[in-house]
Length: 191
Image (cartoon, rainbow, N blue to C red; front, side, top):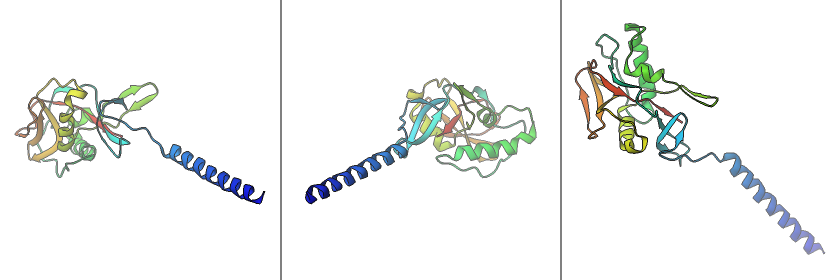
């Protein structure tokens, strides 16, 4: 009788541990996203952390022919390249260029001011991609779709009056020798 009681106690203990472990997994479980998924106001084009985080592209271009500068040619400053850095670049560009013309329309601004409402959710944390992020977007251009222009602006300045662009026809990244040229802009956001 004592053996059965001990055995039942062990089984009960192990069952409790298993139940606790599965509850903990459920609490920590977050959905895994995938490339091409319609999520967060756009289309997922890059994932990391086992699909828990990534980048989303707007479903269409924000502008088909917009300038990078805001009416005055100037060197914006040190802008970083890499995953997630387009957001900081966009804010830096906005802070630097908005003083030139408070009503001006330029690539970073149209991306930063882009909004998508889906149901009760408003997605408003969009930005102009860094050179690196723009290349990730180019690699998934067929899945994301809607790219109708050759050159797209990045948020990376090369030097005074020179900005990195990417050609979505052939994939080449090059330096645009004028920030006053009209190129397309596609906003992205992170999740």
